Image 1 (tube, rainbow, N blue to C red):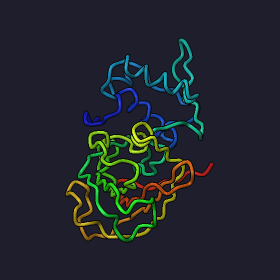
Image 2: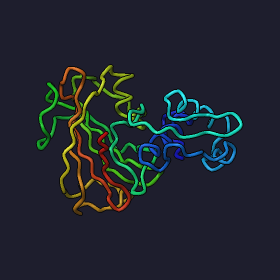
Image 3: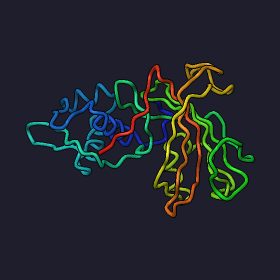
Length: 233
């Protein structure tokens, strides 16, 4: 796993397991491998793994049976840092990480639905990976009224977690619209699809607790490795 990820290692592992459960890669009632074997496979210590499993147990996603093992208890309403991240590897799941390409403050562009009160926004461009596989190219605009400047280092993890803990902005709802668009000319070679090539794109508007549109984004998805998933429960 990438050492550039800002979340603690045990949180990374618990998020990875939550996404695997939600994707059906780990099914209800399934017994997990022995802890030492599982820790070795993930490249972490047994102590770190146990902290991750404790998180899942608290959420009711895992039953730990003394002398028998750890059993998955799937549920649709599991809390996740990446609850709003709707892209998974084709085989399901995958831990999201982010490589920040640029961040700056500028006048909002044309082409987005209206959001926020300020004429300016913070433009954040990132390459998202799933299990270190490049999957999504992001251009995100946060309304400029929420902060004069934003912390570039913090943008390596969940943006919505950063918004909540640093800016006091809780994202409570997001609306995505899918279409086909060309890859922008600033796309890095690592993304896969090259600039000008047709690509699936999700246009998102994200809303705060009072129903205000706080953020808008374009998200180009490399469908050779990933897919957009919306689960209805």
